[in-house]
Image (cartoon, rainbow, N blue to C red):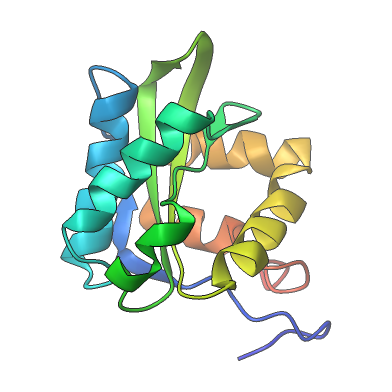
Length: 155
């Protein structure tokens, strides 16, 4: 279902939200994101290695304490359906010198990742929403915060 602007909600399964995760390092955090995407049926196991390969080529840290790990272009065949996962690390993860508390893992077929990245960027460019996402402790809060503009004002 689309909102007034015609933007569809991000494909976030409530089972793909973890608000109290811990990770030893970047690789551990990315592996956890990939495992969650696999648990919800979005990817097969090879996608996790593609996420790590992407991180080795360029950091997926995007600012505001958020990283958006995703696979490489060649990993599209490992994606069964578009999905995101959100893992919140209250204690943070050292992400190549940056302090990350939220990882939004992306799996997308075709060019679907471009739409997902654009929608996430719009949300994360709002410092208040980014701060609320970093502080969210319940899955429903995370899901609400990641809805496109116009869908979170129903409170």
